[in-house]
Amino acid sequence: MNSTTMDTPAGPLTIIVSESGAVRGAGFTAQVEAVLAVVHPTLRGPVRSRPELGAVTDAVRSYLDGDLTAIDAVPVEQHTGGAFMTHAWQVLRRVKSGEPLTYTGFAELAGRPLAVRAAAAACARNAAALFVPCHRVLRTDGSLGGYRWGLEVKKWLLGHERH
Image (cartoon, rainbow, N blue to C red; front, side):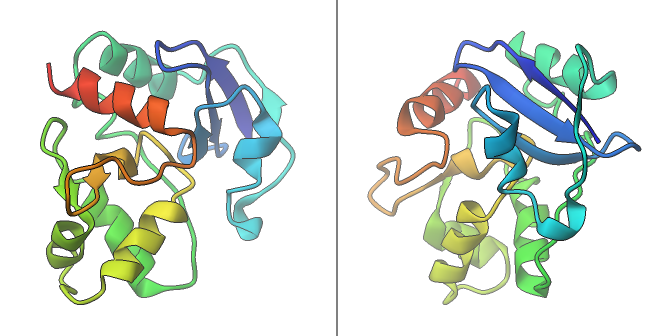
């Protein structure tokens, strides 16, 4: 696997990709170990630091420059062992920037309207922050809720996507 850490207005973004270029982990930290810790154990391996990750770092730069759809086509590889979690992550990837939804709305969109806790768990267990945009899910009252990489990062991302 390869990794890089990019400077962003929200702070450092560390990305870990497979040999084929699929994102296995991403988080707003400069610590590769912190991102690797959220990657499913079956997808972990030795990580080599690289200055660039080709199409992945290009997509992040484009996203930061205002092309909010640039990260949508970046391949992501996550594993949970659960069908709902995998489905929920796929659904999250279809949530459009600038159109956040509530955990209840996310559960409905994922086809399980009563599974609000499971929807929240999908956000909490998401290893590929930004690429699987769990930051676009809010509490029912519209407040930010939680975010593994900090509420200031979530706030910045949502603000960036409103423009």
